[in-house]
Image 1: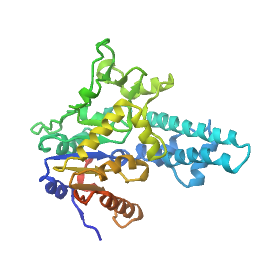
Image 2 (image 1 turned 120 degrees about the vertical axis):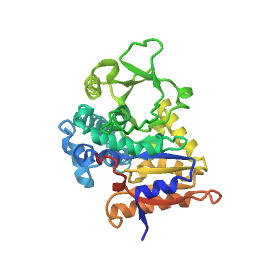
Image 3 (image 1 turned 60 degrees about the vertical axis):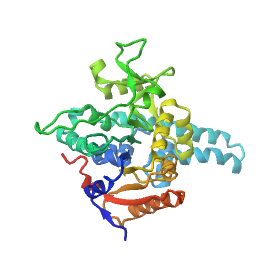
Image 4 (image 1 turned 120 degrees about the horizontal axis):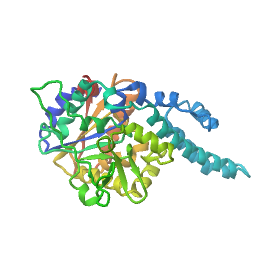
Length: 359
C-alpha cells in the first residue's frame, strides 16, 4: 500500500527544493463549495431545454461530466458517417450539440457562481491564503508559480482578498497575472493582457481560461470589480447575455485542448511557463484537487517529460477506493515516462490535511 503523508510532512520534505509550484484542479473549488462546483451540481442546474438529445447523452454514458459528454459527441460526429449512409446531418448535429454543451457549461457556471466574495466566509479566504503562502508567499523560498485548470473566480478572489481575521498575522502573496492598463484606454473598466514579455514576470496562470477573462478579438481583457464597481459575476453574466463568451478551454480531449491552447497567445504562454519550470531539476510540483484524467494529458505529459525531481499528488478520502487507486496509478505512470537521467519520484499527501478552505 502506498504511503499517504500529511500535507505538512510533504511541505517539510519539499523544503530541499529551490521552488514549489502548484497545479490546481476542480477539487480545489469543490472543497470550497461542492454544492456549486462539482460536475454533478452543474449538471443539475444546467438548462438542456434547447438541446434535449444532449442531456440523453449524459444518461447513456452514465456520467454528469460535461467534458466526457462533449468528447463523446465530437468523436461520434466524425465516425457516424462512416457506418451509416446519409447521416452527415446527424454528425453535424452532434458537432453542433458539442459546441452548445461548451456554451451551456459556461452559462451554468456563471449562473450558479457565488455573486461576490462576500458570499464566502472571510475565514475560508484566510485559510486558502495560508495554503497558497507555501507556493507564492513568505513560506515559498524564492517564490513559485500557481497554475490552475479551473474556470471560476475562487483563486482570483482569494488573491485579491487581503482581509485578515487575525490582525497580528499577515500573509503577503505575490500575485502577478500579467494584466495591466490598456495603453489606449487607461481609464477603461477592464485591464488587458500585457503580452509575452510581461508574462515572464507573472506567477499566476489560468491554463484553461476563466470566467473573468474575455477575448475581444484584438486583445484579452480581464474584468475587474475595482474598475467598474460592478460585481465580476454580474459583468460576466451581462457579457454572456450579449453573446460575448469568456476564454474557456472545455474541449473533450487532451489533443483538442492543446490545439486550442496553441491558438491563443495567453493560454500558450501559460503552457510554456509550466513546461519551462518542469525542466528545472531543483524545483518540485504539487497537484491539488485533480484526478489526473487523460483529458488533461497535454498538461500532465509536460510534467512527466520534465526534469524536476519530485511530484506531490493530493489524495482525497480513502486511498483504496476506485477513484484514488486510478489517480495513484496514473501518477506512477507519469514517472515511467520520465527519462532515466532525470528520474521522477512521486509522493502522495492527504488533501484534507492541507485545510485549504477550513476557515
